[in-house]
Image (tube, rainbow, N blue to C red; front, top):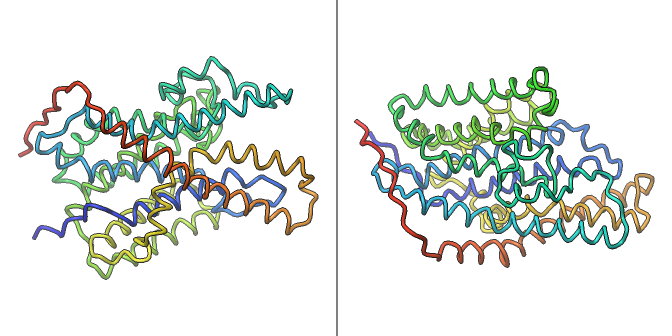
Length: 378
């Protein structure tokens, strides 16, 4: 019996993007004003929200394009144009914001504590989105954008990755198990890479400028494999939310109890699969609510612009005398405030920059490239 197909719009996965972005922001804001947020395991592991994004990206691209690839209708040029429309406008806007801050600091005579983060020679790599391919010595400018550079590498390789997954579709369960194993193994390998390559970071969270394009591949493959598995193996409707909640509990337990972070991938995969199942069976409330879905749609803008907001917000607070020695209520309010401002700014950036620019790029007529021909699978 053919399982019920996923709906075209997987709203819970859009909402999940907001949760992933919020998780990353918790990690990036954890050291401000001496609140000690890093003591909490879930906050300390927030850098893995990026890897959740990578897995989500593979799943969604497979959802949108896998059938086209199977039928030989996949157009590589149009695919890349849509991917550029998706990521480049906000990448350029956030990079522009950092350039304005850099220029403003120079005019005001404010010295940079880390000049390596603002090397003009690194700008071409950032503009070409190759700054996580080993093209720069260290992460810089709008440093969260290293993950967009990594995404760009995955986009370029997507047809190849998807074709390999399709070739193994009769063994989708085994392929999913292999992808999970690869995620766990690569986490261990990359975390220990500094032993043989001292020039890279000493932990997985630092795998950015040097080998960010390598870090994404296992998670991206996991997302594509998970979709290939899910479209052929539906869980019973009564299992959808239990799978989701148990997976979320696994993530919290792994972080809170101090287990090895490599185990996190089992929870991330289960969470994604479970939420997709809630959508398949029409049981996706509250994750399909309008506000939650809108926040998910604006989550990319949130992720991309939170660094310039961070810089302006906390420098302004310092000028106003809000420091680590201030009253606790004031410090807590200041950190809550930066989240509120970031979310509000991301909503405006999504509506005024990201969406209009995306629609304009997609409306452009480009020279046709020959469609990718995928051999018919037996």
